[in-house]
Every structure is written in C-alpha cells, then in structure tokens.
Amino acid sequence: MRSDATYPSRQPLQLQRFLRGVFFATAVACGVFVALWYNRPDLLAIGSFLSFVPFIFLRNRRSGAPIDFFSPDVGFPLIYIAYLFISTIDLPVVSQFNLTLPWTQWIYYSIGLAAYLLGSATVCQTVAITIPLSQPRFWDRSRFGIAVTLFLAMGLVGRAIKVALYGIPLFHPEEEELRIKYPGGYAGNLAFALEILPICLVLYLSVCKPSRRVQLAVALLILFLIFDAVSGDSRGGVMRIFIASLVTIHYARSRMRIRSLLLCGLIAVIIASAIGTYRDMSVFGDVNIQGLESKGYTPYTLWLGSTYESLRVTTEGFDMLLRHMDRQPYTYGATSLAALAIPLPGHRPGPGEIVKKELGFDFIGFGASTTILGPLYMDGGCVAIIIGMMLWGMLAKWLYVRMIGATNFFWVLTYAYFVQNQFKAIKDEMFPELGPIFAVLYFAVIHYISSGAFRVHWNSFLNSYAARHSEA
Image (spheres, rainbow, N blue to C red):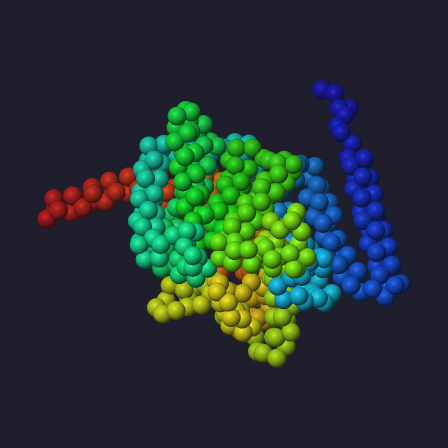
C-alpha cells in the first residue's frame, strides 16, 4: 500500500478564513474610529448591530457546507436584524406616533441578539443530518387521509360555530371589532385545525408526489383553507401557513436557494400589504388613502403603508415602554408567561394586552406590540432580555437538532411551525397565545393516527379488556 497518498490541503482554507477575520476586524476597527472621531455614538451603536450580519455568515460558512437559511443560527438572526433596522431608521414618512427613536435602542437590539446566539451555541449539533438527504418514510396514506378528514371535520365545526356567532369578519363592516371576538375559546381551538392542515397537505405533496388528479384535489383544498384564513381573524393566519409551508418544503423536499427565498419573501410582503390595505379600505374608505398621502406616501408606495406602519409601531412602542418602565416595577415573568394562564377561568389577558394596558393605549386590537424585547423588558429589564433570549436560542437549536436527525415527519412539522412563530415573535412576543402548543398537539395526533400507533394501542386495549372479562 502506498503511504504517500495525497489529501486536499487545509492550508488555503485556513488562510482564507484568517484573511476574512482580519478584514472583518479591520472594518470594525475603522468603523469604531470614525464614530469616535466624529463623536457619533449612534453610528457606533448601529454599526455594532449590523456587524452581526457578516459574523453570522462567517460563522456558518466554516464547515464549507451551504448555509441553511432556516437554521436557528441564520434565519431568525437575519430576519431580526432586517426587521429592526427597517422599522427603526427614520424614513421620509410620518409614522403613527411620529417619534424619533433614540440611538440607545440599538444597544438593546444587540444585547438581545448576542444572548440569542449565545444560547443557540450552547446546544451542540451531535446528530447527522438526514433531512432531506435521506427522508423518513411517509405515513400510511390511507391512515393519513383519515387523520386529515377528522381534523377537517373538527375545524369546520369550530368555524361554523364562529360564523354563527360573529359572521365572517372579512365581509363585515365592523371587521376591526369582530377580529377581536373571532379567535379564542373552545370553538377557536377546534377551528385552529384548519390552520395546521395546509402544512400537512404541503408535506404530503412534497414527499408522496401523488397523481395529478389527487394533486389537483389537494391543491383546491389548500386554497379553500387559505381563503378561510384570509376571511378569519387576521392576515397573520395566512402568513403563518405560508412561512410554515415554505419551511416544510425546504426540509422535506429540497433545500431552497437564497434567490427563491427572497422571491418568496417579496410575495409574503405583497400578500400582507394587500390584505392590510383591503382591510383598512373596507373600514375607513378614502379617508385611509388621504391619511397615507398626508403622511408622505406617494401613489407608488401607498400599498406599503399598512405594512410599514405595523412594523414601525412596534419599535416606537418599545421606546415608549423603555421610558415608561423607568417609573414602574418589573413584572418578573408575569408578562412573557401570561399566555400560560389563558385556559384558566375568566378573562386572562395575553402579553400584548398587558403591555397595551400598561402604556394606556385605547384602540381596537389584540394588544400592543413592542417587539420581542418589550415583554421581556417589562419582566426584568436587560437581565430578563438576556435570559429570555438565551432560552429562546436554546429552544430553537434543540428543536432544529431533533428535526435534522428525525425518523418521522412529526419533528419537521413541529420545527416548521416553530420557525414561523419565531419570525412572528420579532414583532410582538414569543408566545402571544397557545397556538404553538396546540399545533404541536395536533401534529402529534396526526402522527399517532397516520403511523398506525393508534390501531396498535387500540387493539392492545381491546385484547386486554377481553382477557379480563374472560377470566371473570
């Protein structure tokens, strides 16, 4: 055997990494020098926050493998940076509260993101990636069809109760008020099945590749479920379905490239803006257009008004919360964990409603959004932000590790729904309601029925029951 076998040298790769690190450190040093020379601490704070972008890419390119955008170390941090940057910088339009945000707010953003990345780094990825390289076997199709039928019937019952009580908010002149009454309750938990079904059906189409006739029937069912989400309580339902389905395709079929993800992101923004604009027009009519024009929007940017204002109001709300909490005691977890008390008797406000009451807002809505950091800051200031974001990163990485080495698609569906909840949490709070918990429960039931475990346990129960009676 020849002992002089050659292998690819690691020296060029190490040199490339070293040069990247030197370039990154030099750029940071130059930025710090310029900010201090011109006495611009705001530029230093913004630059520190944006420096996480090259750090994230350099950190995730070390293995040489393509970057997985929906991994907890990439997707959430980049969306977090983009969201807070766009909604914090001052654009030439008048926002809802018309506030000039202080530069110190960037420091809180950086602290939260650093804590999240630190928490994610504490969970080691020790399992081999099997999805989508080696997919788990899909469930029994007939049993999966039974599970889908049961959840569809359950969801339609819940939706019928909601329609009988409140009508359909999308087609009602008092839509804003109905949107508050529509979700929640036992009927709302039943109707929630209609939100998780499209994700399961997208998984079915991605993995099983059925006949064209079946594909058409499933596609029509998905469109019906999307229309049901549009006509329900808010545009958030459509966005949850869209993002979770995208993550499901990404891991169940093939990894999506950055160009495809950017295109999908643009489509998501257009959909959200269109639904929000229609909702505002149906409530306020031409007054809405006149109001946007008075704030600086042009005929070319009117369609972005609804989306931008819904983003900007969260960072302005966070600024107001920071100033308000200087005079108030912390809530020590009662705000961030408020959703856990929702099932208890009586009215149990969620985190957004608690913040809304704390700031003295008076408007029709689910609650006041103050970014993901707002409820944490109410609980305990910077210390709560660090602890909460670290735990958030640890949970995300743990679910990701379970998913990439999964032997069934339950973990794919669970992680897909968690990712969309992560992206949504940047705007308001980590768990505004119990939807994510019910989603995991419903996915578990679908897996339990479709995998045949239900039949095995049921037959075992019948056999043991018959044995006890025969002995008697």
